[in-house]
Each structure stands twice: as structure tokens, then as C-alpha cells.
Length: 70
Image 1 (cartoon, rainbow, N blue to C red):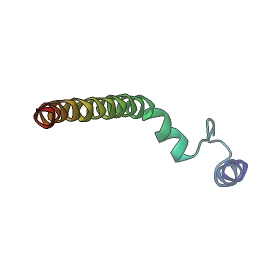
Image 2: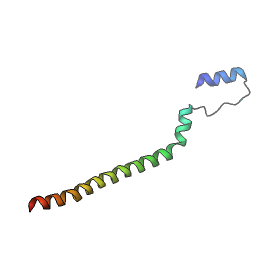
Image 3: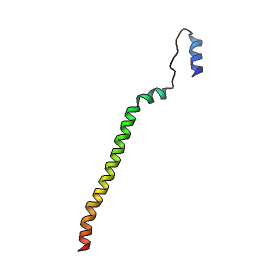
Image 4: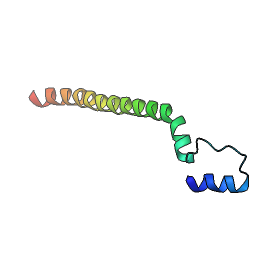
């Protein structure tokens, strides 16, 4: 980042250069809340999917067990 500041001052020394950051750092800070929300919703979806699988297994296995016991 020092090279960028030196290049800017070589072109025009009167231009103030401050808070120099890479573009990924600038964009990454703005996407923190959506990324967190996506993680929470994705985790909730995976948990719900696991519960559905367990419920379907119980729903299907109960009649099969009753039929095979008779």
C-alpha cells in the first residue's frame, strides 16, 4: 500500500491519501451481516432436514415393524 501512496504523491502531492485498503477488505466488511445470516439460515435448514429424515424414518418403520410382528 505504501507504493500506491508514493505513486499518488508522485502524480499530485496535494491530494490527500488516507484509509488505503484492498478492495476485498472494503467489500468483505459490507458483506459480513448477509454472510452471517446465510450461515444461520443454512444451519437451520440442515437441522430441519435432519429432523425430517428422522421423522420419516420413524413414520415408515413403525407400520413395517407392526406388520412384520403380526
